[in-house]
Length: 112
Image (cartoon, rainbow, N blue to C red; front, side, top):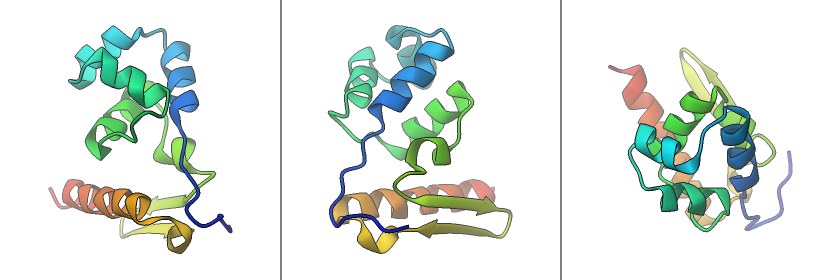
């Protein structure tokens, strides 16, 4: 997969569709995942990229995977012994940091 350098990752529309298809309001989601409804709205309009812990909790709540959100930008392959990201080198430093934080978070979960 080839990505344009510094391509922006926008997943707000996917988050909003997933929320609506699960029948939640922004207020309900905020209460469940532990953030403000304003923050949920910011995620859905791509005003913020979100913390990895909130994104993972949203994926769990909506019954979607990280690939469902980020698959067009980064191929994420999770298996018990390895996490693989393709397309990483073409991301800007902010998004590389998100990927790095995701890997660290998932490694911590795996080692519990």
